[in-house]
Image (cartoon, rainbow, N blue to C red; front, side, top):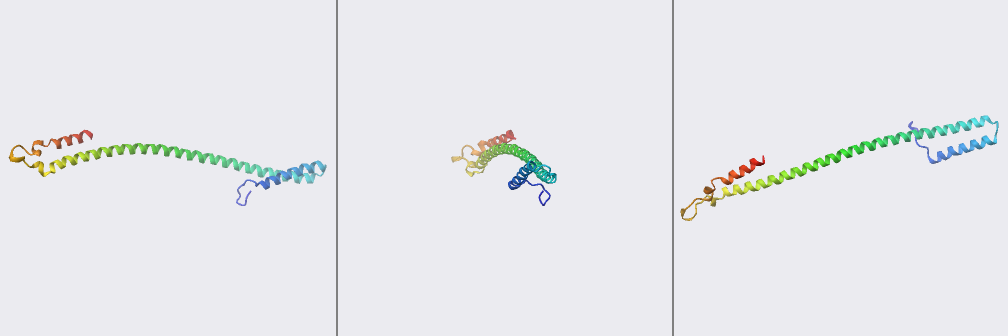
Length: 153
């Protein structure tokens, strides 16, 4: 265990040290029959090394579990963001279509207003015969524009 109380993976040097202790223990066991005290110390050292490795393995397994859970959460957020992005894109296309329609209506309204606002359209033709363009229109351009607006509403 580290000083913070958290189990940390053994370094390659520590793993090599544990292997060497195991090899030395087997060598000592083969060459010193009856030296039980020595063997007990060696077995104890081996058990300590194995416990270190087991604790590190458990911690690694937990870290893998945590990483898998983090990955699952990230993918869920990613999927949600993709779905929202698609919704926003569709909404943007809809709004652009409505904006284009509105621009066309504004152009048409401007044309009709300019027709009625043009002083020349109110003047009678030469020699005072006939009607002005506005009089002969009798408001049909305005009615047509209002009808177009109500049809789209």
